[in-house]
Length: 492
Image 1 (cartoon, rainbow, N blue to C red):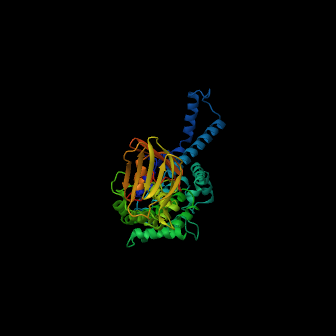
Image 2 (image 1 turned 30 degrees about the vertical axis):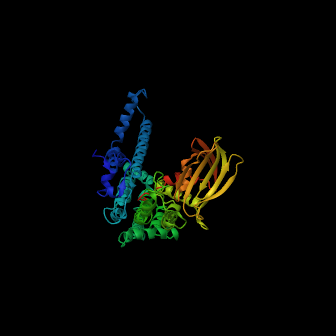
Image 3 (image 1 turned 90 degrees about the vertical axis):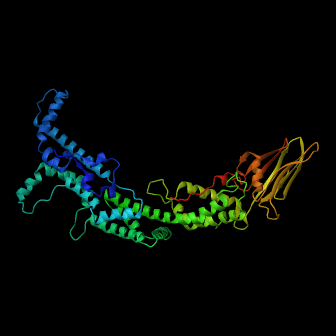
């Protein structure tokens, strides 16, 4: 027998431009399981195969005699034929199942592949043609007499190929041209031509990324039908493997358009979002907890407030992608906007919820409850931007406070403890717009729960403990919200 048939070779030089294979071994079809092998070997050698099978049964002691009746031989031949048809079908099906449309990284890559599909080497048609040629009997010449036709119909190879033709009827039907009607493959080509034209219009636009973003917004905002949608819908009506290939080309078209749109957004993202954050906030307290420099409240408000820098970019650009859960490909968990970006946007929303309200802008309220003062101290004074919580040994109470305290010029936060036996009061203090946060950060936070936490300050051998109650589940003073927040230059 000649060398095995390789589907990669049959598809031709553009195989890698369009297809990918998870297992190249499955693309190799033994020559025994091709039309040539069926006609030139299996059919002609069936009697010898029956003899070999009979001999094998005797050698393996499966039977006591090498003599078989005609009925026995007929049964062996039937079983051999069934096994052959089964192996033949399974091998070709595995080969076709292993032909998958590859991933594409850009619109240019995909338009190049589509050009090959519809007018170049036509790899999809080649793959289906080699399948048809090996699983379907040939058409008879119209010159055959009725007798010659009946004899041809009775030939074993014709009968076997007819059976195989039934197995692969859906696949082979895609190439069949009906009277006054184009073949399924031709209809697919027309649709893929529309898809190619659509992608080419984006690719050749003055700013392809802007055009891609508009296409994504049009599709999602207005639920408008486009060639990607039309190709997907057509794919649902096609037999395998053409349904899989057409559907995958549509999915990849959507993928590369989204990638182009996101890359375009990334330029704006870096300039209008990442740059101001890195220049004005990232290296300052509380985003960098070790920095001596405080972040400006104006810069903080501009960036994080509702309809601020980050929220505006999210609403105008990212929301569409994230709300529609646009993934790289169907069934894939990899979303087009990276998970770490989505996580940071969620953190930003927590910051917005805690520190901003649409009515009052920047500000958060909380309550400080006195818990205990060590016995060697007779008084503690907590000063948070001019808001005093004065406590002497005795009954505990709760004070309601705000941050920032806009009623007072200057920002100092300070805890002072006065000793029981006199002596100079001792303090820890911080100044600046984030002084309250620095002061709480200097204490020991314990018992952190949703809506409250306990903080213990140690000063000059004594200690004062407070319980802080917040209106939000997330503790605004823990610092983690800020120190863990950072923005990447890229979105995809």
